[in-house]
Image (cartoon, rainbow, N blue to C red):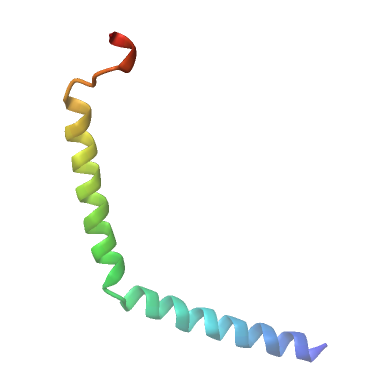
Length: 56
């Protein structure tokens, strides 16, 4: 049964390394910037009157 514990330790170490790499990657910051831009565009779009196809 120690094999399972060893595998668990390896998985934990792998996940820790992966999360550290993700946190140090600048990509999430760029994605957050894009998300903010999309939110602004959405807010601006909601302020404009929307033409409903059923209005005729």
